[in-house]
Structures are given as structure tokens and as C-alpha cells.
Length: 412
Ligand SMILES: NC(=O)c1ccc[n+]([C@@H]2O[C@H](COP(=O)([O-])OP(=O)(O)OC[C@H]3O[C@@H](n4cnc5c(N)ncnc54)[C@H](O)[C@@H]3O)[C@@H](O)[C@H]2O)c1
Image (cartoon, rainbow, N blue to C red):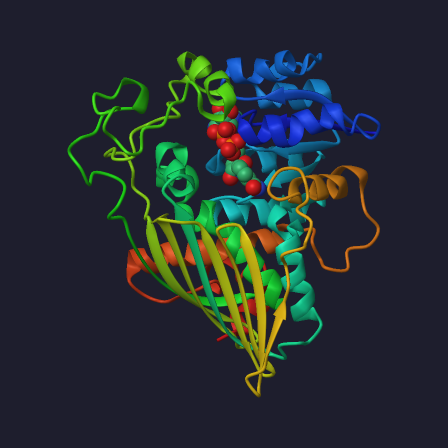
């Protein structure tokens, strides 16, 4: 039986870790305590789960008093590093949500601390457990495509899903590192994992022309907005998600001032809503990637151009399609229509990942469990892209990861 504590008792912390730990993994795991800077949200965990779970606002005190084996980090992104490093220094292993952290200095601190202390950090890339991506990984591993020469990769977020990043803390670069870190870390990790390769160099462009101060009809937040009856983006925090958001955020906002339904057209928003970048990989593949956060519909499309043919995979309107074109132009259509959709968060990937985390595993043939190197390589693309946009140049990941992985310095 391992003892866990969790810091960051928001949506992900409560529903993806605390609740399952208490309700499904009590035979192998004990959730000893939780911590959050918002004392109301921390206390909510025990109240909601009707369990005796001490709630702290002082992380150091929680570690001293509870002496956990493992610390789970589910705070906002920019706070991950301080808790990961304190936990490692205290002799704990760590499970951290993605992104591992948001900038190169904090990334270096995590890598250095993990190496020095000898304790381990797992980064939770749940997408690696989604059935669709597992199928793509298996096809690539089977050798069907041959060597991958180039990748075309596109993510479209619609104006419900995509807009929601611009209402929350995520829309401020200092919190999330931008969507290129917060959101694209999933996408970049998938690309790195699919290719079984590491990124070398990034060139990026980004703009924000949809959200932020792009209209005059705006308020501070939806629930008090004078335009709530006419705004197509009105978001009712009192009723959304069956009242969960009201309970977790609105009813707790007097403790920290965090507003969960802030206007999408606020001046404080400083991240891009459209990005386009190119990545060169160590084994030679080149990737073009784009992310759009204001699309009329949701879609993910990834294409691998290989020595043996072209693998086209997309998921649009909830329909998954995989097609392989061989060198003669023949198309093999891999039927996904009868694939059983797995229950549980994020297409069944959360339960599958939690089983690995909390029940342990002996074999990992698809390398689904991610360590700090994978965490660093995925945010590494985002960090390099942010720097590329800022300095208007191509950026090598070795500029900030080379001291930890010297072989990167040889890659051109
Ligand atoms: N893997 C996934 O699919 C997935 C999905 C959602 C969120 N996440 C990640 O989980 C984390 C939490 O996201 P969320 O959606 O639950 O956000 P959230 O806003 O609901 O919760 C964040 C919590 O962290 C707390 N917090 C903020 N700063 C803190 C600090 N310095 N010290 C202690 N607590 C602090 C907040 O008070 C809040 O309770 C993020 O890193 C996010 O990227 C991952």
C-alpha cells in the first residue's frame, strides 16, 4: 500500500485522481491528504468524497506531517516545478500532470533535482492510452509505413473547447506558457512517441486575432456581463457541467479571486490562438504542425509520409479514419467504425493510465509510461517555438536541454 498526497485540488485533481483513488484504488493506495492555495477548494475534496482527507494550504507542512511515498501534482502548469522539486527533495516519487512545466529554467530545475535525488517523476500523457493513438502507434511500429520522412499534423479546437482556454488561467502566458506548452504538449508528445524520435530544431509563427481585445462588446465575466443575452460565447457557470463548475470555482472564488468565466475578449489574454510551426527530428523526419483554437468543428489529422507509403489518420466529428496508401497508390482502409468506445475520462485513457500508475505494471511494450525526458522533449518543442516567435529565428532544443542530454548538441 502506497501513500499519496495531491497538490492542486481543481477539476483534474478532484475528478481524475482524488475520487478514483478513494473509490477505486483503496486496496492499493491511500490518499492521505490534499493541498491547494485555495483552502475552500482543498476542503471540498473530503466533503465531496465524504472521506476524512486532511486539507492543507501549506505544502511543506503536508509533506512533514504525512510523509507520503508519492506526490501527485495537478496545480496550474507554472506551479508544477516547485512542488515536483520539493517532493523529490523530501524523498518522494512524483506523478505530475502535463505539461511537466512551462519554461526552460523550471525544466532544468526538475531534471537536475531528479538526477541528484534519485527519485522518479512520471509525466501523465494520457493520450498515449487512447485507443485511436494506440492503433496508430502499433501501425507505425509494424513497419507498414517504412521510415517516416515527413509528418503533416493539424489540430482544430472548436469555439466551445478552444474558447474555454481563453476564459481560464490558461490564457495568461505566465500561468500556462501558452497553448504551445499547455495544450500542444499532448500533441508534441504523441508526435515524439509515434516517431520514436526526438525533436532537434523548431521554427514557429503565432498570432491571436480571434480572442482577446477583438471586440468592444465585452464585460469582465459572463455572469455579470451586460451583453450576456446577445453574446454567442455566453457561458453559464451556474449550470455548466451539471453545477460542478459553480461548486468548484464560483463558490470558492472569494478565497482567491479566481474567475472561471472571464470574458474571452479580455485585455489580460496574452497567448496565441493560431500557431504554425516546423520541427526537424533527429532521425531526419520533418514535421509541419498547426493548432487553431477557433475552428467551427473539432478535428485532429496526422499524416505520415514514409518510404513504403502514406498513412493518413484523422478524427473529425467523432469519426476516426485511418487509410494507408502504398507505393502503387492502393488504399488500405482500416475500419474504425466498429471499435468499441471505452468508458471513462478522455476516451477511456484516464482509467487505463491510472491502472498503470496505481496498480503498477511489469511490461510496457508500447512505451506508454512517460518519464521526464519525454516530458522535456514535448515541452521542449513548445519552449523552442515560444523562443522562435519571440526572437524571430529557428531554435535548437539543445540550447536549453543540451546540458542534460549532451548527445543533443551533435544533432543538426
Ligand atoms: N491530462 C489531461 O488530459 C489534463 C486535463 C486537464 C488538466 N490537466 C492538467 O491538470 C492541471 C490542473 O488543471 P485543472 O483543469 O484541474 O485546473 P483547475 O484550475 O481546475 O485546478 C488547478 C488547481 O491548482 C490550484 N493552484 C493554482 N496555483 C497553485 C499553487 N501555486 N499552489 C497550489 N495550488 C495551486 C488552484 O487553486 C486550483 O485548485 C494542469 O496542469 C493541467 O494542464 C491535464
